[in-house]
Image (cartoon, one colour):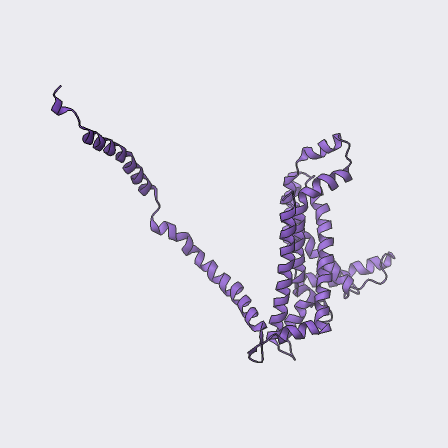
Length: 311
């Protein structure tokens, strides 16, 4: 073989570089071919624009308005609205009443929903679907129709009230009182709690009960040591949502009690759309304090969930 035909060191390096460049070029070409067109990348963002517009108009804009106007008094920046609220026994009572109803109705609703959801997971699948569908409809039954239904059933001359009085089971129950509001709040809390807890029960394995029974644990011990600790994050989260739901309730309460019961939401509505006094800036301060209360409760809930070893 002629020496002139042998590849030199430089030619060998060139050939190797060309050989290695070919796969890289092919991979780059394949990547460019598989890369979506620019309009496909921008299409999802374009479709989100209506949602962003609605969110800005009905969520961000009112929140900004509340934040700005809560610190306005007489056209100047001031803390006078918050001073008036915190110094007024009337407004302090409205927060106390709202928290009282929200806490006890959330606790009662969560307890009833926990027992109902546990029983629901023991029935056949078709019955489960029917109950979940009914619960979904019941969770949307609120506002003025719910108040009217309670008046018909549990009012002074309601059908259930008269029946219970005839049986001697009820003597001094009044729907238009704290006890009546507590029953009303608990009623619309239960369906929401069931819908929130229903998926959480999928985390409980059916053989855990059998394993606990083999180790000598009874039903109560199983629930206290196994089921409830596993469900604790879902229970805490559901309780916070129920609390927020009760704190923000207005239509049912106003339709039942008008302004005869002192709640934060009724006070806010009266200051914004009242017939005598219109003080939207004071209403904004009340709304901001209510939002701050909800943020505080939500923060505590997240802290407890983060510390839970079952989260």
